Length: 606
Image (tube, rainbow, N blue to C red; front, side, top):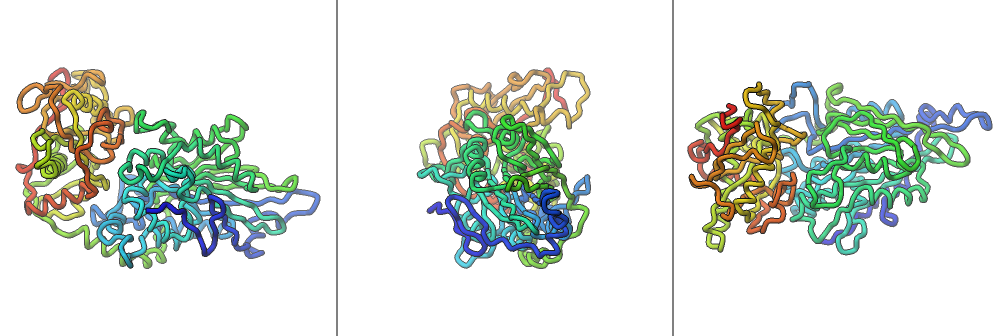
């Protein structure tokens, strides 16, 4: 489809490659005088001052309400957190009353339209792309709350460009992505920036620019949708290009909304020359930025100060916790000197969604959409003979994960039937995504199966050799911390070595092997067999693998470069539901097998 950037006709217009809000209403005189301290100005005796508040969310992932669709209950966690845009709306309203509505700016740093059954439903079950289709619930909520701009997140691309463009058209504010470029023209495919003027009582307006940056890993993670259509150069490179332009256009304040963490690391190995979590690098390397709203990493960072290497000025970063659990608040003080506004100080803090109630306006707005999704996820698709759980799946071979690999094997075998690869053995990978998923004996619903596979991944078939599979398993086994034989085992310290998340630890079905955690990384896979015999390094296998891993997510060796034999766009989660529906019964004897175990010097850990 054409990648024409959107033109905003109501409040703003695309000018050049960005969005300039030219019709910002002036604050009522009394309100502005209350917060902009220019009201107390004495000409010739002290400078005019202005206080601007920038609010930010990130990684909302479809959370409108404080509701857990997988448990069919109000969301709860051990820390007592609360989630959802309905809570954020209440916090935003409070701050707008405190500071004056026209002295605030509300931004988001991406990952909006994927992550809950609510977003899946309006992408796949009742899609917003259908003729006369619905308005996306996230668009409805964010429009109602009054967002000014949002950066693109990598998960915005999970349902394809058509869904993303439809969502974009439904918004009353721009989606920004200075480093999301049209592959043919190398020009921005989305608005790179947004500009807004804030009226100051008794003084000239303050001009604020917001630059949006997204994650270059999109080129890998959603390769099937973006290859040949979009490219995603590095954040530092594009910020260095755009920030001086924004300053030359008269921006008094430059804010970056970046769907990128602060760690300076990547999860896609050497497949791209760009850093995934580059927000702190942008602050350090690119002059002229005042503050950065950080996203992507799902961390809680109230305030991080980074000194720019070229100017020595401090850049303030803040990342609110994901799922609308926190709201970042940047307080920016400006002073008017030598004919223009200058940023005098920036401070950042967080507000907590658990301290307020839902905004009833948002609850009323989306109660029908919420009810439809609750009905959908509670459909019964089969009967379970046993209770299955992921509680210890990250360190023990759990039958519930074998269900995923069995479904993937069956789908790929059927897809390759009658092809030149039909005779090759099919093995499958799966990760213990959740530590809390549980399917009870009795009725099995869509929400039960969705809680097992929480991502919208699709299935790919790749051709690997036995030697490559062995290397794949060794890399996966780095997830475990080296633990000497006889030492006490703490499962929370045993797993997630080197901060590797659970979703980057893979089971591989169809083989048998031990993982000796007493050995150093790279030498842990022992007794690796196929069909009862030692694995032949020259043997060819078809690996049934999710698209994230197939495209290089997690930087597992060989798989991204391996020959692709087949792929599809149907979600693995849907395939699991279809498999259970067809069987009618979820019985471990149909899928469970013991393929691997943890050992220490040959002795089982458990």
